[in-house]
Length: 371
Image (cartoon, rainbow, N blue to C red):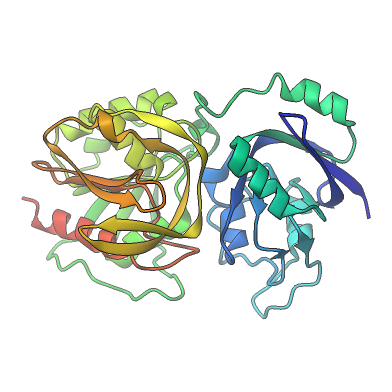
């Protein structure tokens, strides 16, 4: 076994063992409370610039397979776990988790008390850290002092598509194929701030033609594609730093097209409508976050470190539709006169519960009813 250590920006050190690639990696350290779906988490572009601590004690039991990835490669800067299974047991597995991370040069640390680390992050807040098999603690701390905070950081350029493409795959185990109820194909232009593949699959499964565009695409270029609706995707980093995306959404709102935002897309929509966002102490990352909508509680999949400031949404045309029941943060909004709405959580799940899948149907219905 190769020794490895995690050093946090506050000087806390956790000694363990290496799995995956050897070397050193710096990023914000966060935790995810999900009991399943480690492969989807590791490949979710929203985790770009972060190391993920998994609170579930066993990781890697089902290995890795090409069907369950949310992007073409791991997006995390590091993986932290209690125990690692190097010999997976699943008929779908094509590779072990350690081999997968090593292939993509992602460092991993196991053999530490992840409960203690999680409690530390809940108490002190998410912070920068480093995993290393080569550098000593003092050298890591010195470099951590120069590492920028996630606040103010625009990570979208690292994950957005480089060119426009059309998404056609609607396959997704466990979902029911649906139709859009429209006499015409519905064209959705999805602005890629770091989109998950299963969001695109869910839109396609509703019979939508999905055109994915880079995050820097202008409103005029998007409108030239003649969309029936606009989708604003999830993604990493501080939403207030994505100035180009906010400006594009402001311009698109003038076209009065049906618009649906998820996660970072929700935050960018709120900013475009005049709201503000702020960084949460340790964020919401897991599969069992309760969100309330008109007295009904949905159990939702979440992954975000920033939230929309409720007090900043003073515009009478904006209605807050969903709240997180753990801390009362804003989980959804809609415009009272425009066909525009968004949620902070992930209705596509992958992994997670399917309580909120109806939102895709609502978006499709808005497009079908639009003149």
